[in-house]
Amino acid sequence: MANIDIGIDLGTANTVITLGRKGVVLSEPSAVAYDTRTLEILAVGSEAYDMIGKTPEYIKVVRPLCNGVISDDRMTQFMIRELIERVTGRNLIKPRIIICVPSFITDVEKRAVVEAAMSAGSRKAYLIDEPIAALIGAGVNISLATGNMIVDIGGGTTDVAIVSMNGVVTSHSIKSAGNTIDQAIIRYLQTKYKLLVGERTAERIKFELTNLYDPRDNATMFAKGRNLVSGMPEQVEISELDVFEAVEDEITQIIEAIKKVLEETPPELVGDIYENGILLTGGGALLGGLSKLIERTLKVKCVVAQDTLNCVAKGTAIAFKKVDKLLDGFEHIGVYQYQ
Image (cartoon, rainbow, N blue to C red):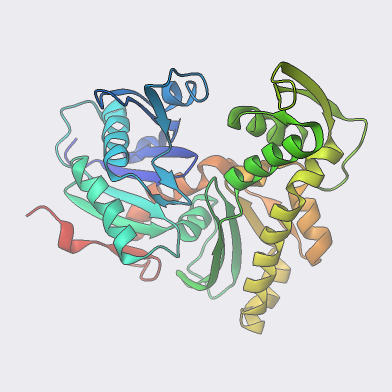
């Protein structure tokens, strides 16, 4: 057990953990519930997520990561430690841990991630950029002198990058991602239908009714919430067109980010992208019709990676074998090692 390597995709919406050669062993929502009176931790992961919007006043459910970076150090450290203990037991002799981070975060934010890993009992901590991990996890050979474009749409950020010869050539990150799309749906229903819905309802609408390529008015579902005028419970029937109107601005920002990266990419690599296409990963890649919309807008082939939710986590597991080769986008935090 002493030589076990742990890979962590520390996401705003979900945390995915890989363990040695077992691959993905845990995928839980990044959420912690605690008692505000005693500061006692009540639940972590799925149990905490199920409490969102349903707790008494003194119980608070928090997402300790915001826009891909740690916003609450204490809760993040507790969450990482608890999730690692779930998959390894409590007798673990200090493992090596590699954690994915957005490519744009600052040194201070990197330090917070590393300290969270060390508090969980790591003897060595490594960081890897999400676009690099996502491509590796999707089975792409990034060591060749060939351009590969990755669009990783997570809960807090969308990372767009061109990777060639084990390094990031051009990248851009925006905060239009899964959570902002949920908020856009909530705002739209408030404005058009005077209906207030919760985050979980918005997320369900996003995945069940989004059609970005060819939205139809006759494909509908019911959304339940509170009428803002009467204050009473209510349900309204919404269509794919409603959802398209709600999320259109957020999706446009993602497509503009892809355009920006392509405009900044050397022409030889752009030629490779035209031939190889754009690879979509992350939970946002599952939005209905997104790949077709990007293909129609940019005139470039676009595909969704297999097992898109776990691509980044799988990449962390494989990356341990490539420590010496991944010079760019893979960082060993030697200063934090236990001696």
